[in-house]
View 1 (cartoon, helix red, strand yellow):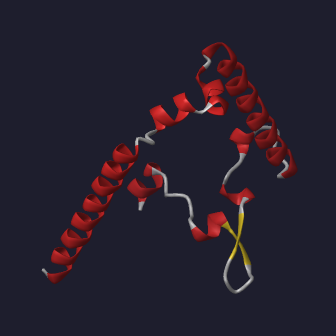
View 2 (spheres, helix red, strand yellow):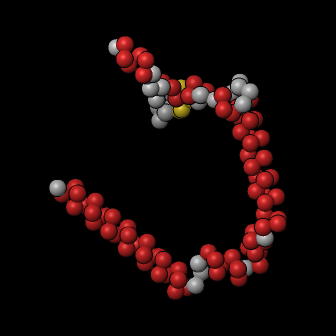
Length: 114
């Protein structure tokens, strides 16, 4: 009961803080739309004819980097990466495979047999 009251109070405080921040930004007139229209440097992002090229380049470079990580893990494509390929270094300094910390769920066929 007390825990519920505390969470309700925390939620109310967070909501009030967000409303206060919104009012502050509106009073200062620095909302994102106004901000990007007034600054010449940020107006570049609003030109659709140029932006699609930047987005396409970003996506291609991201795919290239992810494929490079996949190749370094010994697989051909990033979609072949599994939990066995990831190691987590714990606070004690010991490296543990992710599939040992978070094992795969048992399949439905195995669950029916057991």
